[in-house]
Image (cartoon, rainbow, N blue to C red):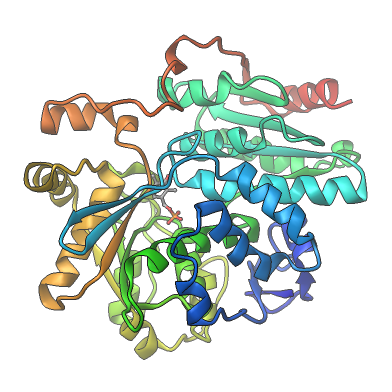
Amino acid sequence: MRFYSTNLQAPAVDLRQALLTGQAPDKGLYMPENIPVIPPEEIYSWREKSYPEVAFAVMRRWTRGLLTDDELLRICYECYDYPVPLERVTGRRYLLRLDRGPTASFKDFAARMMARLLRHILKTEGGELVILTATSGDTGSAVASAFHNVDRIRMLVLFPLAEVSDRQRRQMTTLGGNVTTIGIDGKFDDCQALVKQAFTDPKLGHIRFSSANSINIGRLLPQSVYYFYAACRLTEKGERLVVSVPSGNFGNMCAGMLAWRMGLPAQKFVIATNENDEFPRFLATGRYEKIVPSRKCISNAMNVGHPSNLPRLVALYGGVMDEQGNVKKEPDFAAMRREMFATSVTDEQTRQTIVDTWQRYHTLLEPHGAVGWFGLERYLEASPAEPVVSIETAHPAKFPEEIRSLLGIEPELPPSLAGLDTRPEYYETGPADYRWFREFLQSRLK
Ligand SMILES: *Cc1c(COP(=O)(O)O)cnc(C)c1O
């Protein structure tokens, strides 16, 4: 299994190399040269399988040569030890709740698998890895939790002291062990600048760093699994599923498109964005314009004006887009429009959806899932279809203020978040100053 760079200016690598480096040397993103196809009979035979078993059946197509089947199966059980509810909303319309992992975010699905794949590589090769990451909130907690207590890995997370919520901070600072959390007296951009400088600092050249950020192929492949998990349970032979994905950086939907190429029985992907509508416009007009600065919406994890995974999607349709968003070769727009319905959802529509689905179906959505659900309903109005599934990417309890003000109820905390408010916190603080940060790293990573 080889992976090429979407910028086409770097050599192809194996999965091991792609996982360790993240971004290709030409600043492109890694994509598989060949996509393995799973026969429909096999997919239907998964209906009774548990989530870890489906994950094993899908992931072994990618990890051949890196792990034995026994090793992979053990990792799948370790990663996915929480429920994955497929909730019927009405008729044959379903919600796939990916919000029961340790940080109540769908990012747990990929981050946990990636951490264990890296652990495996380090174990066979020897050595240690330092994951250095800057976060504005949710990604840092999912990644920190995924790497928590994973052998041979040290984790350092930088966050802007005044810009994360109490709950977001606690999700990182209560872990301890191999996770060091550093609150920076500055903005998210300052944190990111410190991290970037450390990666290229020759004085820290002896430390093996990785960022584990969302452009790593290891954050993408494990996300193709849940599409199969839903499809094998919801479709009968010959049927094709409509899937709706609330999207920001487009990792989730790219994983879905990969799943489709692998044989997922799908007929349409609904790509629902918030008011950052650069992709729906791109699909409609064929012209790409990023949104700078990105628009602030209540589905805040999707406030992305230039999705970093877009070059991957363009590559899937035969085009080339560089990391800046310049289209070097046009993708097959006709095919893209046939397979995708892209739509932008306002905050007003998002709030109304949370109210409507609660009143009509007693289904509780949070803002990201509501964007997906509204997009799905908009699509179905013009093109009725069944069965359909929409992805819920976060737990409603992560947005208690919004839920309280719209519905007057208090969302129940999932077990992973319960007790968070009373656990002891450990974190360091420091200025947004690189010299201070370098000394900190030198003293901690001896
Ligand atoms: C990250 C995130 C998204 C966006 O996912 P992408 O893969 O970046 O499109 C959506 N919802 C939530 C809750 C997230 O944390």
